[in-house]
Image (cartoon, rainbow, N blue to C red; front, side):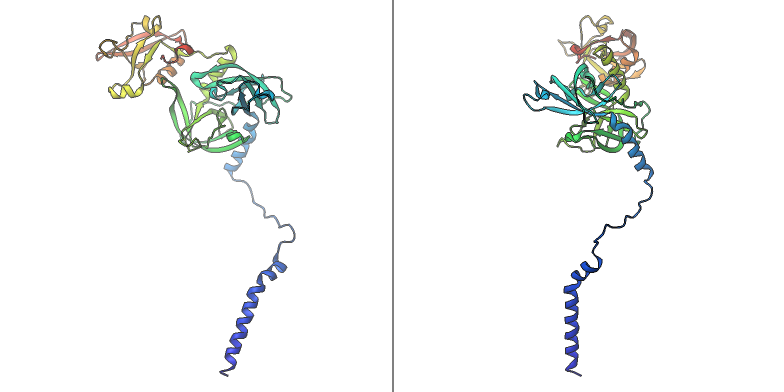
Length: 367
């Protein structure tokens, strides 16, 4: 008995080793999928998936790829395309709304439609103060599908949004997120800001500029324009120009080729300077000669002593702290109409009626 036990153990060990060695081969023979697998039904899409699909189907035909180049690059001669971005079909006449920085500095423009058709375009108007531009397409083979326009006045932080564009040249890319904040200010220059900008965490990358930000109803509520990122890639902080601004400025560009810049003819100190001085309002640095502000008797900083002159604290009773705040309120008043400014000087407040004027591109630093 004592001699048989080791033999039995050895036999079992050999059998187990044999089974372990041949198991993969047996499995290949018995269970390998030599025919297509049976498809498991997935069930219905959930509500958010259906919404996302519907949004893309509704809006994507209105999103185009914008190309801008110098020389004759788009005609197949000269240097390669230098700048690309996104745009939206605004109307049936072939007007495309995009960002000014997408086409700035170039003289040849082309647009690729969702059908794949490449169409030459020309600039009919730019508004650098709003980072907006309108291109007009030459004749197209297929009818255009203008984007559905919503409003930005009733947006809420937390609501779902979708971005469609061409990041890194990849056509028709959809991302989604939420509205992270409202009423942001986006600097366009050291002294010019776009007011009421929408902040979103929907991934936005280079090439998305000029594409639409869309709500869950499939309506455009903003035009994607910038990201905040040290690397240049999406970091969850993107910005879109509110569609109410786009709607107003685009119609002006289409009608006249330019967008009036409402102002009163002042050069103001930046918010940082006001904060350092403990001032709650807009410090007037100087008044443009012959402007409505000059006619109303407003005064800037004394060039000899550096003494602060007038500080604008409100427009039509609404507090202002930056030129962006004031510009938005002056736009509501309208060029040619009077705005009532609350002005402080030497600790004393007074009301001043000033006519709103078009300060134009040459007066970009002015408020």
